[in-house]
Amino acid sequence: MIRNRKVVTHKFKAKPVVYDGQHFASKLEWQYHTRLELQKKAGEVLFFLRQVPFHLPGGVKYVTDFVVFYADGNVRFIDIKGMETAQFKAKVKMVEALYPVTIEVVKRGDFR
Picture 1 (cartoon, rainbow, N blue to C red):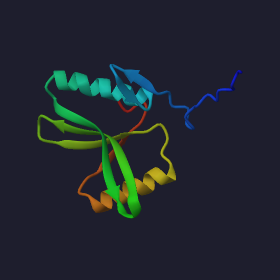
Picture 2 (tube, one colour; picture 1 turned 60 degrees about the vertical axis):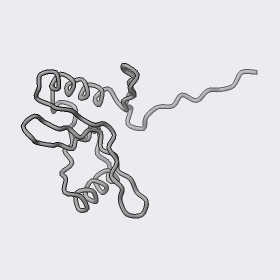
Picture 3 (cartoon, rainbow, N blue to C red; picture 1 turned 180 degrees about the vertical axis):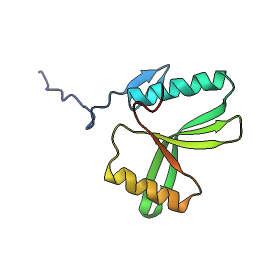
């Protein structure tokens, strides 16, 4: 018997990437990760974390793509976005109101 297989696609046409055993939600996220790895080798970045959760009221969770720790002592919270939805914007406002952080949105063309 042949079963119809539904091809799963992302609603915003993001193409997932698997690189070196790691899963990335989009090519843009993978490219930013690659950039961070180069900055780490150069000594600009000490280390970075991926997919860091923030727990919000009502059982809601927001996950930022990267938390980057720089050699100069700066820490940045980065979210890679092709498109900002109203839900995303609302969650970011909640995170920034509850935690002492600023979420930076990186879009295509913001880095090379």
